[in-house]
Amino acid sequence: MLMASVETNSDSLDVTQVINQQIITKIKYLRRFNDAISSHRDREIYQLLDNQRYAKEIEHREQQPNDKGVMNLVDDLADQLSNYLSENLIKYLGKTYPFFYYEEYQTGHYRIYFGNWWDRRQFGELDVLNVRFSFDQTEYDKLRTAFELARDNKRYNSERISKISSENDRLQDLIDHQREREERKEALQEQLKEISSRSGIWESSRNKESRQELVEQLQKLEDQEEEFRNAAQTIKDNERVVLSLSKENTILSYEQKSIIDTFGSFEDFELANRNLYANYLASLNESEGKQVDDDEQ
Image (cartoon, rainbow, N blue to C red; front, side, top):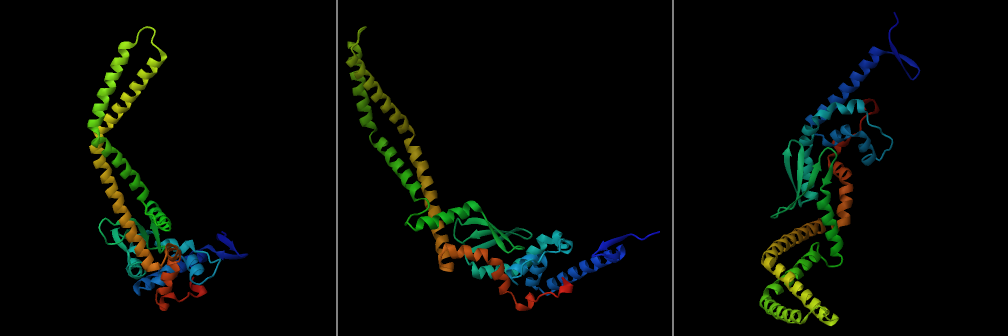
């Protein structure tokens, strides 16, 4: 009976040998991983998790594929590894991004908060295994826009606040002149009554125009009166909105100042974010960054 075999590089290898070799490779990987964990060699752990990225961003070598056959051996430990690796990463981020704060809401998962002030914003999540920020896009876009507006000495919500304030001024004017409207309404009604009493079957076009004009003026006053009935409540509602928008402006100004004080500009902040993986791994001890011999990969 012929033994099953596979062809690899034109050499016939026994299936058992192939299996054994794969097992040895996996065991080597897991042993090395375990050793790195035991010694807290975080840089080496990141290399083992994504050798392709490590080779490109740290060693500046291209065409270094990941061995999925061994790297997926620790996939089910992602949360635990994230928790383990977060210790040194968050210490590093505390110095380089002093305005970010983190909350582990479940094992290995971290929310990012911008600042330690009242009503601070939740700004996204920290992806520990990939050493990157996953920012909340809506909140991030607000910050980006705030920086863009600042170039023209504008604030994020200034235009909306101005429009709402103008609307409140108009509504307050309705409240202040309610008596005058009542008097005007009575006068118009008297004029309309007088014109109507003069109209007959053959009403003149001039009389019709005058009557129509009075009707339109009365309707305008009625519309204003309808607004007046809700004006006080609308003003209160608008004031609450303005307060909320003003608070958001204040928080955004805190965030802008934090970034400028730390990085100098929003552009440099974004550059640091893009280079976070390389910068962080470069900051780890050189003993953690030793390269692996070809026969160990």
